Length: 266
Image (tube, rainbow, N blue to C red):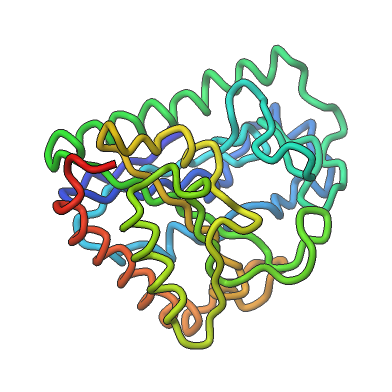
């Protein structure tokens, strides 16, 4: 199994898809317990949701599951949200705080997975960002995520539908954040927030270097916006998804049009 799937496009937009993969190698699967084998914390069907929403978009998708190694975590293991419940480079629990392993991975196993999977994904992502910036003078990484809207272990209450993250405005030009939050805010029957519980994961923070022509923004969608139910079997809802895709297309199309005006800005 190739750890990364790449579709090269001509747009200034690169879609990062770190959490849609469900591949778990046999030796890792053998050490997961029944709860872990359910793979509940997948960003279910996100690659399907975004497929075709922007002509010419480049996509970089991790095919491996986040329980193997989380492609959106700092490879050093440093927490993204100090003082808050979260999961690590190789999660020991699921998003509800329950153990997922019958035998937790050793430090050596974690390092091997980092090299085999995490490093491969980020090498591919960096290469595509470089290629796109070489073409356009700018590259916008739009990092695609989703999560259940109610997870008490991670956050209180119900998560808004659109959760925009720019690490408090540091990972992209202000116009990118403003445009995205305005489209989300104007979307009828949807809720939104910018830099709320999810301010952007390691990917957004690592690649968001506006002064170098790399802009990054994370979109964390509540799974209630496009799944029939936020529980197994995690069914993709075509009607919900089509309504949502209208707004996702608007965001990405307008970001692509905005990109040429941002060359040389930070």
